[in-house]
Image (cartoon, rainbow, N blue to C red; front, side, top):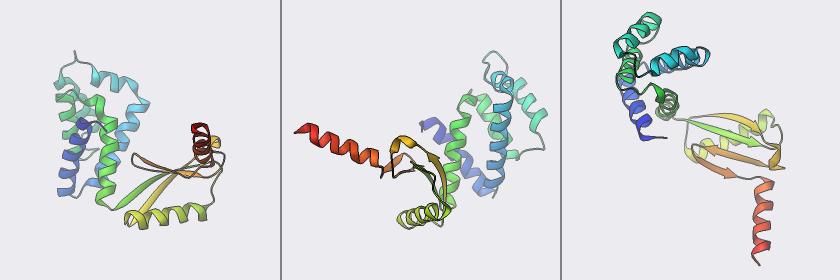
Length: 178
């Protein structure tokens, strides 16, 4: 995660923690990104360097005043003033991570060769909750048939590979080194 995105997310999380509005701002943030995704013209307009920041902030006021948390709107103004609106998706990702950390939530990404049933997913989540000492674990499960069998578990930028493919690759490397 680039340092710029982490710094902005950290500033926002400090403010929202003080005001007990972290969940509201997270919801507003997700809504804003959804609007960005569905209205690329808005994002393009806010990124244009030749448009005055006052005009951009006026548009944000018209669209979001009274609809989003006041601190979130001020945060958007700051991004406009500093020409950092292009970092907004990365800031959201880092903000989510920080919010989950404060709530003692662990986010897993489970990559499996075959679909997993609910019990298997719950066992994996329980194991990682114990390892990382977290109160709650959320998991996103993706299927990757190239793994042949087994799973990979991603926590942040760390990946634990328990797949058949990785074991075969290790064995192949060991045999070719001799």
